[in-house]
Length: 249
Image (tube, rainbow, N blue to C red; front, side):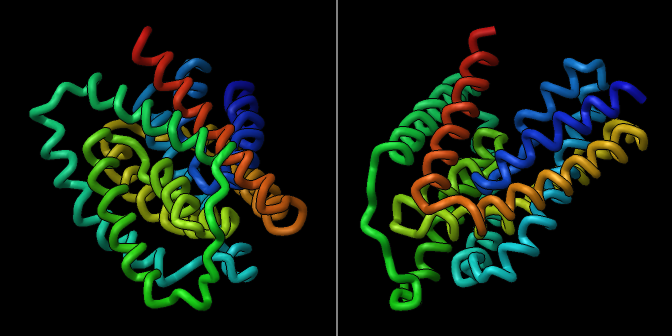
């Protein structure tokens, strides 16, 4: 009971922050759950399900606020789903550590871009003809590399959309919608390898839903475009630091 309650509080804190950035909290929650003594398979399945829960609650608000770019989100979903298995297949013949170090390099570059680069904003309403191309291109990039490295494609999608000139709030909201499906798919895969802890799931689901609602409210009502961009950059640095720690351990 105590472990599940602590896990729920941790879930609330990280979900609030990462909802603003548009990425799921699973990459942080999994090692935290394991450190709390939770079986790794249960931790992975639970964290991925929490991603889907959190992003569902957040996306409901983002959709009402008209922040989700459907002409980009749908192509990314389709193309990423097709190319992710190809990336996983290619990865079988490559050195995983080398690939992960390459991913760390990308994250550091993307974080620096979020913190210092000022792309020319695009008026989405006047660029609808390009949105489909953006979606297909970003979906191919995120799907293949996500499958190649075995990591969430959301870490790729947000910085690339911002680099293309998409407003950071819309980039974050669009990615949140996409993460729902990728996380739930991952949950179904991991759920077959371990039993669920219903006490853990209950407390963390409450924390996840509450954190998503708070994070979505902050992103839509309180934070400015520049602040959202700053938070995304900090989150990417955090992901890179965690991966470096894992690779050097």
